[in-house]
Amino acid sequence: MTWELDDELPELSREVELVLYRIAQEALTNVARHAHATRVDFALTSSTTGLTLRILDDGRGGDLRVGAGIRGMRERALLIGAELTVAARPSGGTDVCLVVPGPAAGS
Ligand SMILES: Nc1ncnc2c1ncn2[C@@H]1O[C@H](COP(=O)(O)OP(=O)(O)OP(=O)(O)O)[C@@H](O)[C@H]1O
Ligand SMILES: [Mg+2]
Image 1 (tube, rainbow, N blue to C red):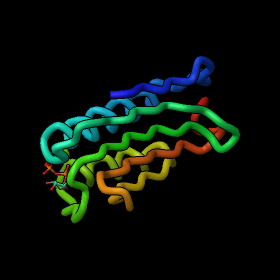
Image 2: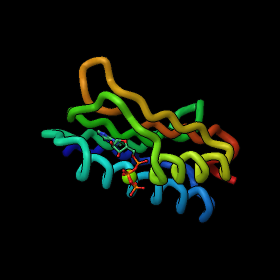
Image 3: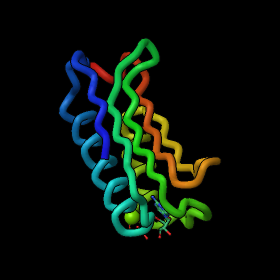
């Protein structure tokens, strides 16, 4: 597993923090339960676009039925005005990406 955490993340509201935590938790649980991955790349980075949380695995990927877990991630993202994508990677594996737009990330 690799981790990339920006040194200078903006101050986050408790609400944003909790959403990031829950989404990371569900995404990593899904990797452990479903992916049969050999590798996970976890990144929390900040840029002018906002804050990006990304969890990539190199597992079986493919067809994603949307269950309670993915639905829950979507709902949590909506609560803080963030955008969530869950997609199969062209190279195999799954890509979970959450973007919290600039102002919302620190408010
Ligand atoms: N990282 C992943 N790699 C491969 N398949 C995945 C991955 N994440 C999700 N899936 C597939 O998508 C389905 C839906 O995921 P989702 O989290 O919504 O439900 P779940 O994990 O099956 O159940 P739960 O409601 O407990 O989270 C999974 O059952 C699995 O088939
Ligand atoms: Mg799940």
